Picture 1 (tube, rainbow, N blue to C red):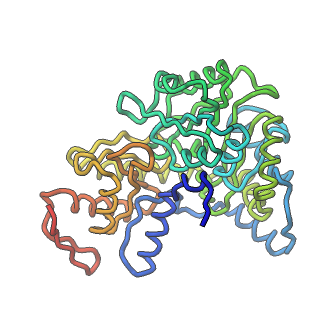
Picture 2 (cartoon, helix red, strand yellow):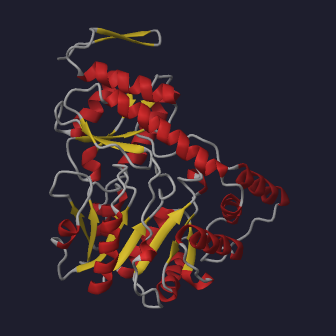
Picture 3 (spheres, rainbow, N blue to C red):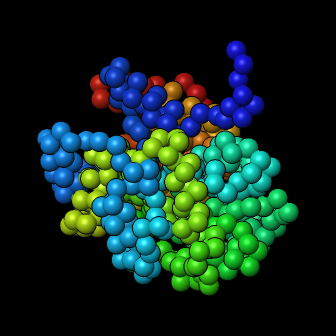
Length: 405
């Protein structure tokens, strides 16, 4: 079989693979706990469900414009003004089948083969593969100070003649760290001065804790005209707990949006009308579900952090947002893939290896599930890893016996 050169370089999504493994184990009746998940467990807003049901009952579900329905674009415009203080026109926005597609289409619009895409590590698992799909070169930047927060010196050290774009995700998946406002200011100004594209993946921007606030990239952009190279990506998946609806969007210059729409029109056409209807209702409806989710996640984070404090040698920075924490477990095992498999095999806890996010020795743990799962999952991990743990552990009516040191 003949496979393309690009296809041979692309690996499967580690997070989606783990979701599949967890589903298989649950279907078998195994008491698996999924601490690797990337979706809130709360339900979609009622406004979204009612709107989608009404459209479904009408039977009028048709093709949509490649850039989104007029109502969807109007909702994106409203959202951008409300949350970012920037007024844009329909020519500045494009709806997509998820924020992931918006990023992918943006990269296809700006990257040529051998161009370089820079992004800080740890990074979302799809960023490198997305660059490769464009024939471009992913350039992860690991902070020199050993933290999960980059500095401008870290970024500029990796900028070269092939650098075309920088991609920033704050608050960050997998670390939950909120990049300082000073860094966002510097990166916006730097990319403008150097003529680099800057993609802001803001999908978690309204899931921030402890009274903190994400920096607004538009506050520091000097050029927001038709030649602007600033691209803002967002969606309803995280803040509105609408992961399965697959609606995201991009806000950029009209010239770039036109190119992106052309690409999307040949890829998938417009996003599903039924799902856009639900997204519009969520954005324009009562917003209490977003705040309720944020408060719930902050509480879950505090519970997980308290439990992780019981591990000797494990290092983790308190997340500022999202629903993940990125923990350095290298004191137990430096190979994160091996460690993740060990925890799944021995105590049926799903975690995501840090190597998938560009930093070995770490595990990404999610606290978006039930408090019971968080508590029991961490307790199982502690039993499996701590040599001073009791010899036996009961999971339901199953007795596990430690046969390792």
